[in-house]
Length: 285
Image (tube, rainbow, N blue to C red; front, side, top):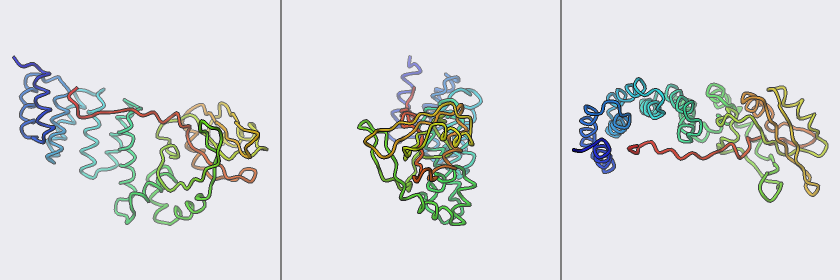
């Protein structure tokens, strides 16, 4: 007698070959026998998505949320369907539900950002790249749309394009040119990684830790500040550690490119907050 794993693998093979109707029939029969297995609903939902049957796909996704509220794929599927239906704000909300369950799900994080960009560019004659730039600059959809409409983004990018900063690579601080013209989550004021720390480059020799503490404390409670410098380098860098994740994004938005002791600050989140999390959403497992 064929068990759940064998049935699931058989359906998944049909799915991989693009025989979605056959896969759906297999999953549907399996659901009658194993009604409490989330994988069956998840894979059937994917098949409906491929067939653009969004009504039936949504029925499966909502059933998954009801039956399996702690399964991140339940929310991911609904977010995907909402994206297809161009309901980008709702899609973003459900991708963030995934992140609430799994903060390291890079796929959901990237999709949430794409949903924001779609909201920004909706009904406006701006490209995806411009939408990303606006989101990076402002940190939220509403302000990004305003920045594009008023033209304030273009002026700000021109102001920032000549910023230089000191890199914290393994070989020690190095001066590097940065244009801020491509989206980088480490430079996103919305703080997608929920970092409690900032890395700040272009720190002049005369800048003290107490000065930076006072400067960054305007945007959140600062826990500690540590300046790193090399006698052979003209500029140093600093780590600003906050008590919570609200302060770093606010500080980045307001202080990026700020002039301090003759140097424009370059701010990002530390590299170690970007943890790659491989997420495979379509396997039968």
